[in-house]
Image (tube, rainbow, N blue to C red; front, side, top):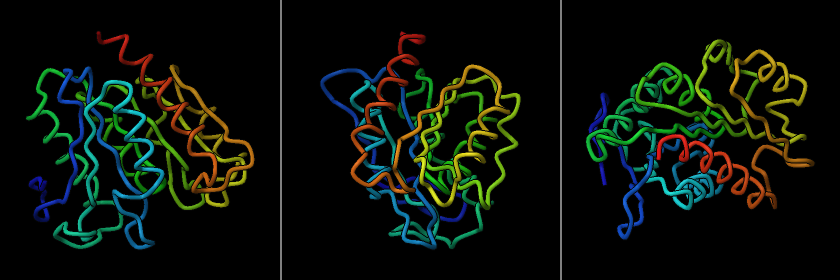
Length: 208
């Protein structure tokens, strides 16, 4: 499907179980467009699947300039508006349901910022935070439930840096270290899926 975005149409994929009413929704944001990031990235796919299995309708989408999405890369600024367009799509399709924003790498930096500010969003999940070149100080003081998943050998988000970000956050918050994993969680995607699934089930119970 396509959704209207501020720089043109955005390519997207909305998934949910038609046999049961979704309990929440999730917008899932992909890694850096200039380094091959798309909504079909394996980490993004697994994160969306974990959300669906927890009873959420999920919307994956390509940022501007990626795949069939119109526009061009905007260094994370215009991409925030793309996230808002995804949230608008979910709100129109499921107007009564709360939303979770899930972002991997660049998608976490962009998506969590929008999710932290948007009243429709009740929970945030960040995977592979690229702390070497991205500032997450905007999360300080945010009281929405937060989950961070990070590989202990991620070269773009060193353990000490990600731990410092986590320590600065307000409760409620959780962090899951994937021991030995690098940025793309190779061979550890089931563990990533399980951690996201468990977290989202806890959130769903609050709104059931």
